Length: 444
Image 1 (cartoon, helix red, strand yellow):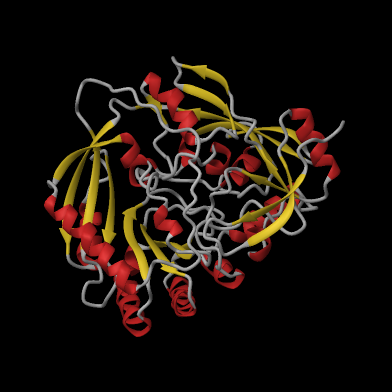
Image 2 (cartoon, one colour):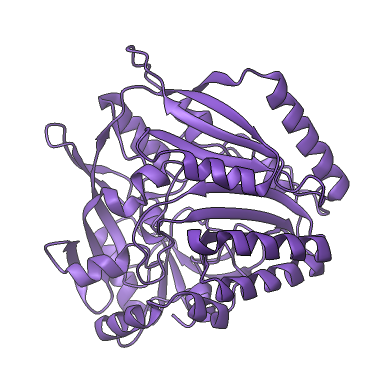
């Protein structure tokens, strides 16, 4: 069979720290997917290539992109179940399900992420304290593996591979379709409430006090431009509106081309401080409670892409950490000491509650999630290396999806369940056919 659409393509991680020119193919049929897989020694899957870490490419792997696999295969309104192909993005998916007042609540914050990518990274959204990760909405899957062929996965069929595939960053094969269990959503409007906080400790305390049973999405925005304002900010709480009338929405299904790509970073301590002050003042002027639309709440970065473009050609650094409750106070003390000592340039600091049961290297547990964005410079790399030491000391879990500079030593010391994943996947795929830069860097 003749293979079409084969080409060389330059891929980059979303944080712009990794680039590679590699072989790339976009199959449009199942038989084409099979044929491509047989021709190549090493493979890796591409969704929308929006992951911060380089999960979609490697030097010796051909990248398989499934954007042509984006159909609804089955929909059962009575049982609230839907089967979709993995190349469908979140906007396409929600435009279909929301017409029936249904959705999955574990929606990551950008509408063009593919469902296959969300499953492979075990994605979560703002509702992660209530609803956990996308794992909780998956009923079954079908994958294709170069040696093992077509495999049906669920808790009742090939359960071990099902478990390895969710959050397995594409290492078990190509996710082709997924069956989701849907939930009712009574309204697409939200009510957003705001609470001012003046310190990291106050912010954490409010997050702890907010019940996970109140059906709200809770997260914070905190300043981190100086020692004096560290932690000053706002805790946001989104609740689905009680309005009886349901308003149909239509989400954008394609990304707009963005031509604003400055070479140098616009973000520095002065510009970050100014932007933070403006944001804080605008929120102080606004009402403490307001109605917000679905798109603004669920996809907060849509329409705000210039935040990332402002980092320039060098890109940015991000780390996302799961902080155990029993050591969070000690961690924050050392974090503030390191902050004062290194004075890192932080563009974003945020906290939220998460829930779940940690397994393998999936980023989930009943912990507080801390997110930090940095400009890409030597001082910030040094600061993040110091944070790595705190992760090991306090058994903090760093996200391999968000941090593309995380090293193998730190990763292995933080994830105690890692050995089991390696044993199981080596048994399933001794040749380790599916490889990415991230999997090779971390020894997966």
